[in-house]
Length: 620
Image (cartoon, rainbow, N blue to C red):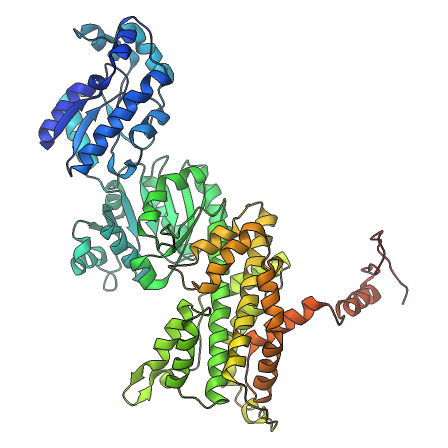
């Protein structure tokens, strides 16, 4: 592509000849009226060009449908023209922009014979030219063969670079390779620890046979087509910053870095601002689904520059899970670090969902006396209906697993780790002033699991002799149902608060949608939340969820009382019940707190039924 006289036909024919594919000259597809108009010295307008551009799109579509390739020469001066040509074909088109000085092109146009395009119209083409960012740019002052050699060299560069070939990076690479994306893979070199990781990964998986492997960073970066797109799956924090600094000398304006790790949203915001000054795009991207999700279809939450997102959207769609309507579970979340924020809250909800299952298991195991296999059957039955979720389904498999004659769950040390996102979610909720008792309870339960062995003297002293009546399975199921609704309500309340605080304008319904498949917290409950957030910005504004929570409150209360009487630790269940009690406002406690604050700190208070909203202070 390029203005008239830039050599499109000459270079196109030579390129097609060396590739042994067909060549088509776009000029041959102009209507007679267009040709006559140009002959008369009148430039074509958008209306004149529309059918011509559609004809070229049809030609390209038929070529691809026949499983062949072709070189097409066409001016395609405006972005909107290129969009018409590439409609439904974007991933299959490589734009090659031939550029040069107006003086050189005028000389060439004056020298050619029997062409209907007069030299006088050249300026009109330069006037509307919109230089394509996503193209191979070729200087027409070079000789034709050098130009073609450069095109061939650039054409064979890869589309996407992946940095970090741990469990997630490796799985994402395999996913993209199966989607037909040309890949360059990079993993750092650490002598005796990480050597030839990229090459070994390529050799281990047949789908990666066409990928290129590197442990030399400059070579990796220069193997990528411009604008370079680099997806990082490395340790969050300072290591990410160090790696960005290491890449910077080798990057160019317009390149796009994607951080798929669990970075803190404020770090992402800072990186976007830092790299924007260097004209490099940075997309903070939450990725959920674990190893299998990354391999077969994760849920993807990108944020940052929307302009940059549009350039990578097709790559994310290529590997994302699909919702029940066949749409990708990937969507632009919003500006700044909103993608990583949403992923952080996803993980917070996940913490509480896991803890609720663990607390339910504890009741069934230690109060009801069921063995792991019997509990798996209970969970499996629940999973066939409205309680269906990935986490419940995976727990069924966990409880059925044996090692020798023992259930594996009984051999696992009673200590739960964490990677920090639950802590971040708790802090974010606190900073935004949102009660997230269930996420906090789940996080602190993990902390307790790491210290309880060091406080042994409390063990026997904590046992009481109160004997409660065991509950029915249906009552336990109802309590679990209610607690899950409250967990999701709290999680999305944090997202809503962040959206308002940071002016992100987040689409809660779409966030729920991309969490219906691929991610760890996918569930039937999440599917029900999509329509709820269409019309409401808070889950309890939707009658179905509010009414169900209140209807199931008696069972939730019974479960909490019974579990506590049997000395079980159930922080998430009790947090959910306490939250409902607090929301009801039937019994006041905050007024005592505010009076105490006024007593010792003169913080003032407001009075009930005082429409003026005035603040008062009392000399107590």
